[in-house]
Image (cartoon, rainbow over all chains, first blue to last red; front, side, top):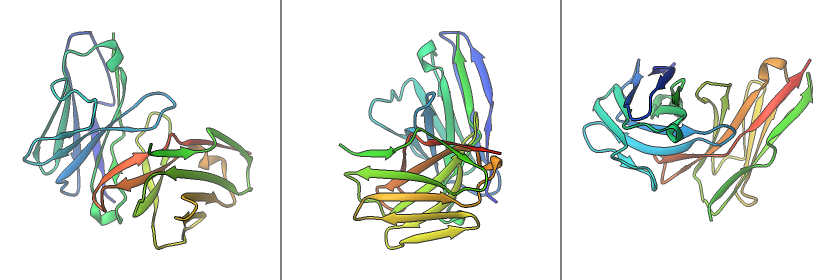
Length: 116
Length: 113
């Protein structure tokens, strides 16, 4: 079946530094990928929709200059958290639109970001 | 305002019983509703999708119903097993068939042996 690979699975960084998270579709092409954030015991909140070859669409309240998204190819989208702060600590998950699975979106395994 | 509610934060049942999870929504008119399983520290895994014109869908021990009048979906796991213990999320697709997924908070199911 469709697989989305997300790296790293865990990262700890210092305040003020930037962190890049990669999301790859391994056996299918994804023109659209989605980035979510999930706080403990909360639902997944959509941050942005990443479209190959064009600018990402950000949800209300998400700072596009802080969460940089690049979708340079049909199999790779990256999320860079710039100038990270402790409040950015969260679980970040990507997903891809895989039409082959009957509209079930395929998710990556997530990245646990801790900013110290 | 638009809301998706999964009425139980946690559900504990005995092995072999049927688990029933509820998802209610307000102020949406979704064409599709999905159920996902999420294990701790992992991304969600797609289980089932049901369309607005479908009343019921089954997959092995799973059954989903969708009542657009009540704005409710029920998710059943029959003959539950300890391995079914996880958080189950319902999600709506809004903005058309290729639109965004909006998730409920999930119900944490624990199946005791």
